[in-house]
Figure 1 (cartoon, rainbow, N blue to C red):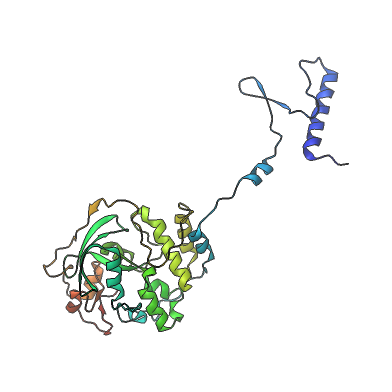
Figure 2 (cartoon, one colour; figure 1 turned 30 degrees about the vertical axis):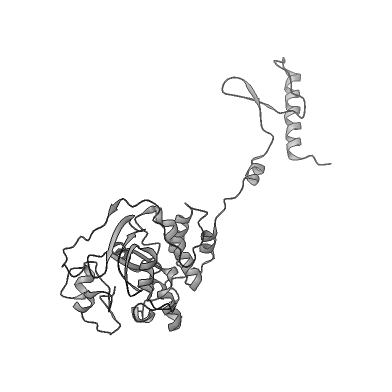
Length: 318
């Protein structure tokens, strides 16, 4: 019968010890076969060597567990980015829509959902409110037509979605995507314009405490609409989610938690007129270069300052 490896090793060690003892003057007691082999310690004492193998220890160590967001990210399709050819904002509908049929457009729905200290006109139009911004961890006072610095961000940018599957959707699906609360969040306007159409590989909120929730929302949106990711994007997502392995997959309407108490109050940095939130430029190109726009007809009075060449109700589109 073939002895197990550990038994054979012990037998060899015991036989060698007996052979040495037979040829020299014994200086100590020989350990009986089957007992731990003495190992000298740094203090000059002897301690039994462990008989368990490294393999057994490794196999008994539990594998790290991950939550829904991490698992959903791994399930996303990974492909290269398609061309941006054919993209325009109007491919996703003419501005903000009332896709849920409640009589209010998606922009005002999101402002009413996230802002506190609300002032509302006619049951729909949000005139003012306070936002705890998740991207910058600041408190922002929103004022319609005034010194407001709040945008409604598409968590997955429309242009990014276009290059990763939306180019093949029908119009109804694109309109639903652009107005889905799962993909919308009121945020600091400066951060939103800095983000542009970047994915997670190129941009994350400066507020690190909000990054897990932000990436989980991107994963949820891309899962819901079968939008693919690039390999670099997936790597960036997993790098963030590794810091919060139990992060759940958000549902529509879930807020993006700032994660920390707001520390400062944001205020507009450019010089503005009393009637508008942004400075007036001689062209949309200059406004965009300075980080401003887009402006929506019927919502932003800056819209009237510029020519709407394609008649889509939006000017200074990025």
